Length: 308
Image (cartoon, rainbow, N blue to C red; front, side, top):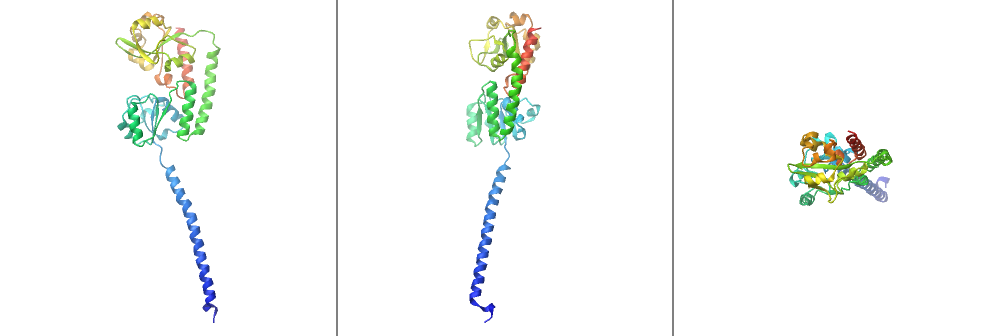
């Protein structure tokens, strides 16, 4: 009987072939499963992050972290950098609509505590879009906290750490001469907005007061929190040395001449000596990455106003 017709060898050969085929199938399966998992992971990575930012300070942080390409919409307070003004607008932060935001197909909404109405944010969340509301905390430490939080949310932790270190260095450089100064700083009245018969001013705990404290100035208005309208009599009683506006507000009232015509202002020490100062609104009150520079600019503006 020839070897080719040996039944035992035929059985051995068949067993070897089956073993080889099983091994081949196992290799194929082992290589195929991780590959499919890799494809799934790659698909997740390629899902673009689409962020709507509601709050000028938050938008500035996103740009500073190099994630501006992930922005698909911003609110009307997002004025810096200029590129942010070219993005689709979802309107004013306090009067949002869920339809306008959802129309941009975001997969994350970042907002400040001022954003609203709350019902709109709930509608957006109920539609399956995560909404993250960050604490206002108008302090230097609050800005650092928001940078850290946003850095984690958008996976820019390294960039966030670098930005924080830079801000700390800038902050120390700006604050040292202010803290060392012996000359008393003025009493400041901050005017946010106006109407024909009233002036809206910043009281205790307002972002304007926080900025005054950082430059060593005193808020001429006490007795209430936040921003409220003030009567002409109360403006005169406040006796401010300097009246501080936003650039936008000062432009609306007609510059320094228009400001002096607001009820009561002409009868204050600031009005009598024409001590009017202003800074761009979001730069001064946005509490974003430019806070050290804003404090330096406010300090210079108040010193200039006091020196005529």
